[in-house]
Length: 338
Image (cartoon, rainbow, N blue to C red):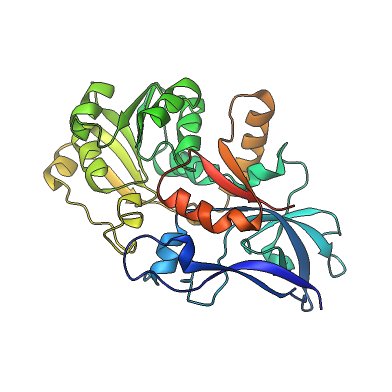
């Protein structure tokens, strides 16, 4: 019997963030594709902080199911087709799908996206740049000369958002992050003019006022909490705020990862005519192909980079997830399978 390995949730943490002890690497029977399915050998899969919420339990209205004890983790992956039904992608082709965290996957043809040569590096399909692109073009509608604030600027979304904002014509781009080393990376190569470091001694709001003395026109919020509150206070009249994430709650060791509460000054929203909206790229499917075309062009001309870390082997996956949740890495994190 052919076997493969996959990462499963062994047990939910009683408190705090998931650790490698809550996961297990299991050898099991290789999946057998049903009619209409491909057999895919995964080459790379993304490790995302959002798994903390899925591991903690179901959130009403969430587009993805929770991960229950005994379940295999899942997420975006790029794999090579091993076998396919007639009319589907051919063996040897690369496809994007959502059954990462395992060496082989049986995936419905309709749930796979053939990659072709749209991007110069197939791993770049695991970028979360589409979220940033859709939010900045459809949600906030960045205009030439805007001052843009990106909270969580050093994460998988934020490292793309700063660069995209600059390419869309932003006049000044400010990001927030958790360490001086990451702040330096943001301003030396990722499109940011200034970076605010949380828990750096000075209050976040005071640092933001110094980094954006004339206020901000666009708030790209991936954090919530204190940072969203400070952003609203710093917003200029007519500012547009898009909330794409909630890392302050999602990665809070003292919380459950399933809520992210914040107190905002509603007078400021009214008096400054600030628009504030939650945003998901799923509401704008047309941005998928649009983003791939623009991303591929920008990568080939060197106008954008895909900041990411590659970890080798399924054995590293559980450790890497904990590293992502504790903020060790900058940019996206990908597990590469031999």
